[in-house]
Length: 104
Image (cartoon, rainbow, N blue to C red; front, side, top):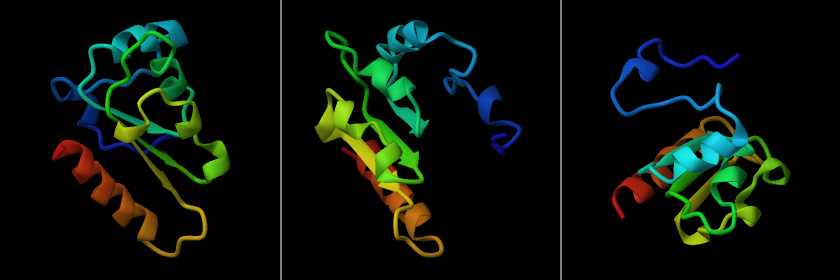
C-alpha cells in the first residue's frame, strides 16, 4: 500500500494510472510531460515501439527490477535503485535526478 500524501492526486495535472489498462497507460503517456514510476511495467508500456516516451524517472529496489533497458528514450530515462546504498542515499539520488529531468 503506497503512502502518498493525501492531496497528491487532487492536484491539477497529477494522475495515478493504477486503474488503467497497460494499453490505456501507453496512450496516456503520449500526453505526459513527465512520468514518475516505481518499478513498474507502465514504463515498458510507455516505450512501446512507435510511441514517444516522456522523460521518465523510475525508482526501484534493485537494478534487476528496473525497466530502463527496455526504454526507447534512454537519454531521458533516469533510474534510481536502492542497490548497495545506505541511509538516505537513494532518496538524495532520486531528487538529484528528478531535478536534472525538470531542468533539462
